[in-house]
Image (cartoon, rainbow, N blue to C red; front, side):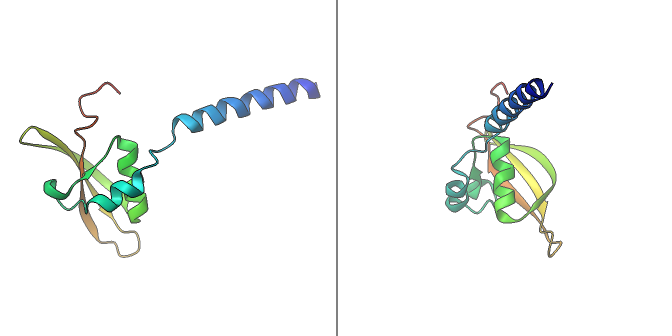
Length: 105
């Protein structure tokens, strides 16, 4: 019985580790953060995934409230309205999603 539990436990850990690895966020989020301010379409963070958008918000210390899509001159942008939990100040954060928009997810 104990041997069976160990095998099942090891299998569970292997599957869980594989799931966590597949959810890993892009490692370049700090680089993306340093490259722009996200204040508008001309200064949007250029990201590779929605997960990276939320990693940027986390690094900024913001909580997402809403998300909307804007297309300007054929270029897609996600605009996330986010709040600073400490000050309750809300702001729009712009993301250029042209790297992955329209691709199958």
